[in-house]
Amino acid sequence: MKAIVYKNYGSPEVLQLKEVEKPVPKENEILVKVKATTVTVADIRSRSFTVPPTFWLPARISLGIRHPKKKILGTELAGEVDSVGKAVKRFKKGDQVFAASLTGFGTYAEYKCLPEEGPVSIMPTNITYAEAAALPIGARTALFFLRKAQIQTGERVLIYGASGSVGSYAVQIAKYFGAYVTGVCSKKNVELVKSLGADKVIDYTSEDFTKTDEMYDVIFEAVNKSSFSDCMKVLKKGGTYINVTEPLPSVQMLWEKLTRGKKFIMSRNSPETSEALHFLKELVEKGEVKVVIDRTYEFDEIVEAHQYVEEGHKRGNVVINVESANHS
Image 1 (cartoon, rainbow, N blue to C red):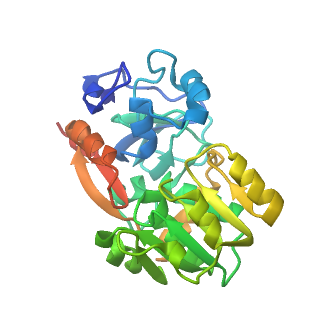
Image 2: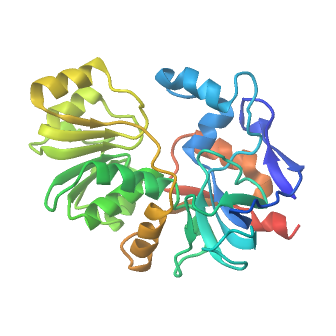
């Protein structure tokens, strides 16, 4: 089968299209013929080994000290079940599924084995493979953190980076939970964020979100580009600050917690189960959540796709059409 392989950390050019051995599912696994995958921030960081300083050592141990342990990147997919292990009960050949593979990677390939009890679910019936492939990481991340924040109806939530993958889903899910949502993004993305249901959108290039009288119950930092001190100025006493990128709290955060009772929810992976995907499937089928796709690249355009995402200005998600490799 064809796969995108990398042997060394580095620029997008380390990614190469190669022929590799097709995997065989174990008793408790399904083999998925991948139709679409994505380029996420996790892929960029793993390929280039650019991780937060506080996470450097555990990341080196996990990913590989000198060279990557896992030669095939890719953290989410949508596709069709090609075969199943003899112990599998939930899926059958021909099922259309979407799945996350954040711990195992490996979705930059024509075929991928997944454990039946892992984060894999039947696809929503009303979207394409490309759209389904863009759900398992960004949407699941937004859902996980917003659930942790225990948002109540009527609470005011500010989402910084509202036009990215996690941010665009956070806007929609926070609205579903009944929040009054303010999105922060660049001017070119204001209309997009409004279309996702945000009650108010702030263009950070022309307006400072801290210079208003608005105070927030929850601040959701999706891209780690806002000033923490500025965020604290507009976060209510006892409010919750979420950062999906930074793994550890700072001394400043601990002080805010002690003196003003503020809560901090930091970066961590959501549980590797299918529950969140089932929930998201229902939201998509009800029309409560839609997928934003910025660009779609062919499988042999993976280098260009990584170059684009690495620039840091994508809207929503960038999808890779793996099906084109299936037919070549």
